[in-house]
Structures are given as C-alpha cells and as structure tokens.
Image (cartoon, rainbow, N blue to C red; front, side):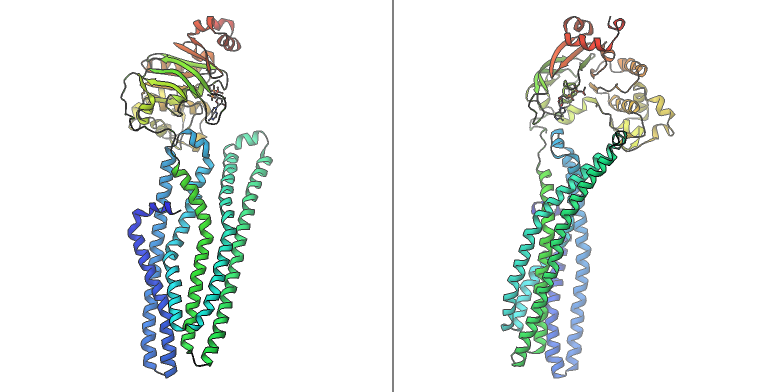
Length: 575
Ligand SMILES: Nc1ncnc2c1ncn2[C@@H]1O[C@H](COP(=O)(O)OP(=O)(O)OP(=O)(O)O)[C@@H](O)[C@H]1O
C-alpha cells in the first residue's frame, strides 16, 4: 500500500498542513488534563477563584485551538484523499488502456472495473484515517505515557498490565480479519462478472429462458459475498465490546488503586483525574490503531490488487528503437508466420507466408475457427507472433511505433463496436479532425447515408450505450464509415459485410472499389460471393494456408476452396 502513496506527491502542501494540524491538535488534547489537575489541586483545594478563572479561560483557549485544528484536519485530509483517489483512478485507466489483448484476457474486464472503482475507494477511505491517526495515535500514546508518569509513577503499573492485554487482543483480531477481507475483494470481482454477463447478455438469457438460472447464479455470488462480509464484520463488531471491557476494567483499576494512594496521602484528587484521562488517551490511541488495523487489511488487499495492475507491463509496447515509420505504400508481407494464443496447445496460425499489395484486394476465407480473424489481428499488432516476420513496406512491424503502425490501418472488427455519442462523433472516431463533409462522404460510401438521413436528428442522432438503437447491419456500416474517414493505406474488413443483405453488400463493394482503389485491402469473409472478385484469395484450414490465388486458380488447385464454393454457390454462379 505504501508504494501507492507516491501518488500523494501533488498534494504535498495539503499533506504537510494536515500533519502539522494533527500534531497541534494532539498537543492540545494532551495538555488539557494537566490544566484540569491544576484547577482541582491548586484552585479548588485552596479556594483560589482567580486562579480557577485564569486557568479555566486558558483551558478554553487551548480547547478552541484544538477544535480549529481538528476542523482544518478534516477539511484538508478530505481534499488530499479525494485528489489521491482521482489520480489513482486516472493512472489505472491510462495504464490499462496500454494493455495488449493478452493482459485483458488474463485479468478480465470485470476485475479491471472493480479494481478501478471499489478497490480505489477502499484505499482512499483508509487514507483519510491514516492521515488522522498516523501522527496523532503515536503522539497520544507516548505523550500520554509521559504525562501519566509525570502525574504518578506508582499508578502507572496499572498501565503496564493493561497495554499488553490490549495489544494482544488487537493482534488476534487482525490475524482473523485480514484474510477474510482479502477474500471479500475477490468475491466482489465474481459478483461483478456475473452481473456484467447477466446484463449484457439479457437478450440471449431471455431467448433461452435462462432467467431462473441467471438469478440463481447471481444469488449464489451475492450470498457468497454476504456470508464472507458478515463473518469479517462479526469479528470487527465483537472486537469493540472486548476493547470497551478492557477500557472499563482499566478505569476501575485506576480509580481503585488511585483512591488508596489518595487515602495514604501520596496523591491528589486532581492528579488522579488527570491520570485517568491520560490512561484513557493511551488506551484510546491503541483503539485508533486497532481501527486502523481492522481497515488496513482490506485496503492493503485492495492496494495489492491495484499494484498488480500497475506493475503489469503490457506485452506489446514500442521497443526502444521503435520509429514512427512514415511509409507510403502499405505492402503487407507475412514471412513464415506462426502464432499461438497464450496457453493454447496448438498454434492458431502456422507457417503463413503471403504478400498483399496496394491496389489489390486480399481475401481470406475458411471454416469457422480456421484463424481468419487471428491473421488480420496480427497486422495492427494486437498480438505478437511466435516466429516469422510481418513486414509493412519492407519494415518489420515490431520496429515501427505502435501509433504509426495503427495510423496506417483502417480496422473494421468482426463485432462492430459503437460508442455512446452522436452518429457523427462515432464516424469522427476514425479521424479526429474530419470535417462534416468528410464524414458525410464516408457515410455515403459505406451505404450509411440513407438510413442516417432517416434518423430523427440525422448525423446528430445519439447512439445509445453499446449501439443498441441501431441494427446489426447499420452498426457494421457505421464502423466501415469510421475506417473510411481516416483514408488509411491498409484496410482490414473482418467479416464486416456479414450482416448486410446481398443488395447492400454488392452496392457497398462497388462503392468501395473506387474509393479504396489504391489501398491494400483485406477482406475476411464467410460468403464466397463477397470475395470472388478479389485479386488474391487465401484459403485457411486449421491455421494453415490450404490454397492461394484468384477464384479461378483456386477452383483448379484447391480442394478445400472447391468444397467451400460448392457448399455456397449454384453451378451458374461458380462459372
Ligand atoms: N483470445 C483468444 N484466446 C485463445 N484462443 C483464441 C482466442 N481467439 C481465438 N482463439 C482460437 O484461435 C482459433 C482461430 O480463431 P479465429 O477467431 O481466428 O477464427 P476465425 O477463422 O476468424 O473464425 P470465425 O469465422 O468463426 O470468426 C480458434 O481455435 C479459437 O478458438
């Protein structure tokens, strides 16, 4: 957790203010019982009213000063903690954004969300307590012991017996509660995962009548978390009465032995009253420690989870020699590329070699799971390959800066993703400074202009979260427009025409033909009719190239291709 405190740096000034104010407040707390003892032993015993009034007024001033410091502490510590939380969330988010798909697969989206929100909150809350108690508890404890000794050394033996008892109790509670709080955070992750799946998959859940099953799954995760939370809080709750019992026993012991000493004339009443207050301050400071220790395990579990993310180094980063390469053409070449997903036994792609040139369309076809999406995902370097080389204009993509590499690509993913915002904003995502004219043009080529104009507010129509207010085909066309507006050298359409009807598919491909005539185009498709005209077709079968050439060449040379074609086209179309 301490390592996270580096994010407190920007709040140094407020932090110093808090520490100084806490220090002053603790001093005032420590001084007050001595003043009271003075009033009792000197003022009241001797009947000196003037002395009582003078010391009484001074006491009021000290108490007032303490109160002002306390208000200042609350104000500035809240400022520090909230600022720290904001900075931590920001750091986490920007760090996670740099992750490659491998890290996302490893940690899971639900856990990343819990860590950015719930875990950060835990650390933030404990920070406020640490700020208040880190300084005041030790000063109060040590100062209290010194002041108690100064009042009466003999009576301090009571404290020698009580303090170890309290410390042992605190350690026992910590040992019990700490593991439970760690488990609790994991169970929050699980609950978030079930919730996420239950909400995003609501259509499928309803269609398959699985509501009951999902409810049960949520109920189980919820109950599991609740049970652990109850267990942990039971320990915390049970600790309070035990502490209070120890404190009350101490009070009785101090009054008991103190009154014997007063009876023997070894001690004054005021001194006993002050001693009692110091004893309470010492025990109270230990209680503050225990509170801190109860909260610390949970926060340190959260801090460990946050640190785990912050320490994760994205697998794919710019190497030190990475250059922002400004190549002009967009020739993509795979040389004997083999790639396996982390943890997979078999490679998803084996010994892939081909060359795709500008002005030509390279189509990729093959059965489901044959590695088509995997192949195109390697071009913008979403994953790094095991062996072989991928070159763009003769430059190994691993030596290009990620930004310049991705700027060359217009990527239309298999699952169209839209963001909440207007239609225009979604298209502008491809090119930040695109003019309205450019956006309209891209939409026209993508065959999206017509349905956009029919929408209530045209290009200003708001897309709902996840793009639920547009159809699958409309979503695909908007994400094609988003790629077109950047005018990149390389286009990747990963099964991007699948939700379009034949007419729109044909119109779109005709419009694209002129628009992207000079670019290197990759089209992943399931339908042979979509790629029949391609300059080069790669036929993938279980991660290997089973054939390469034009439609006519493949009809002669590739059995796999012939089978795919035969399963889709009529004899007329095949010719
Ligand atoms: N993120 C991943 N982690 C592990 N394995 C994966 C991952 N994505 C895909 N795979 C595996 O890699 C293989 C190739 O998958 P890929 O998505 O490239 O196939 P595809 O040809 O595009 O299939 P489809 O036409 O169904 O989209 C499959 O066996 C799949 O199970």
